[in-house]
Amino acid sequence: MWSRLPFGDELRAGLGSPRSSRRLSSSPRSRVWRVQLPEAQVVVKQLVAGPDADERYAREVTALRLAGRAATPVVPALLATDPGERVLVLERLDHRRPSSDWIVDYATALARLHATARPEDVGTLPPWRGPDQADIDSFLGLAAALEVPLPPGVPGELKDLVSRLGEAPGHALLHGDPCPGNDLHTAAGIRFIDFEQAALGNGLMELAYLRIGFPTCWCAMSPAAPLLERAENAYRAEWRTATGSAPQGDLADACAGWLLRGDALVPRADREGTDHLARVPSRDWKWGTATARQRLVHRLGVVSHMTAHHASLHGLSALSSHLRREMLVRWPRLKPLPATRP
Image (spheres, rainbow, N blue to C red):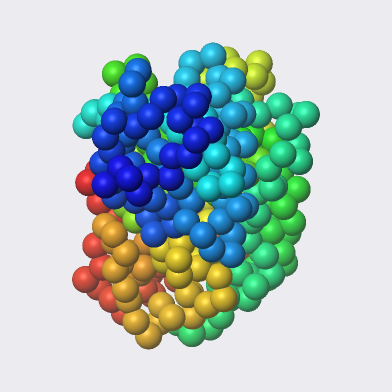
């Protein structure tokens, strides 16, 4: 019922009075409506009250405004806001079924999004937060629980990895959760939505999603190698076009960082405060298109391969390979991640 719509007097004065509305599905952290206004249909989003609701709202508004500077649009237009009610009014866009090689256009749009932030924007959004010592301890604990010995030097490699990730160069506009479902495939190109976790950092941390299996997403997948190569090349080419330089950073480091993150095995509502890697030896659980063990086996394989000749992560490569082999011996029915999006 549109009478429950959080569309106050200021919004009505600027955009007109809603003629009708329809509630849309959304996460428990927000409410979303499709609304007919006098001049056009729009989307109204309200961030639900909670301990971090104001921060999530501020992140989304800031990110949409930064991204709105792109020469080729990468987000819906932000038409109006009501900070008191944590409401955003957005351009409504028609989503079409993605093509079979959608990941190439996705990577291109992701590079455009990342490139919209400028050095002077530092401080307008929180910095990207990578793995820490607790994640290292959890990962090493998993190896011990599965009785896989540590190659020499691995704890030091992981400590150095965490330091490198924390100091990775760049001020890209990171989406924070660039998952299928948060990308709208329109006739005019891809637009990203839902920026509640937006941050500034190194763009390779999100380019890594393609190889590592979309770690924060319900729809984990592993695209075919030729598509991956095309997509990563498209990202780098678009970044160079937008910025005049090559992306900085190490994609192998970025993928290894996601391997350490046990929180990337569960939905957002279940993160923080639980050692999820410690749960893997005793139980498996389903989230979206894959189980936790499926996701972890995939990540181990990716990191093992990418770091095989990496001077700073050679021990991690061996450990990842041994862990993956041990998991497949213990649980031989584990299947690869799906190759395509649902």
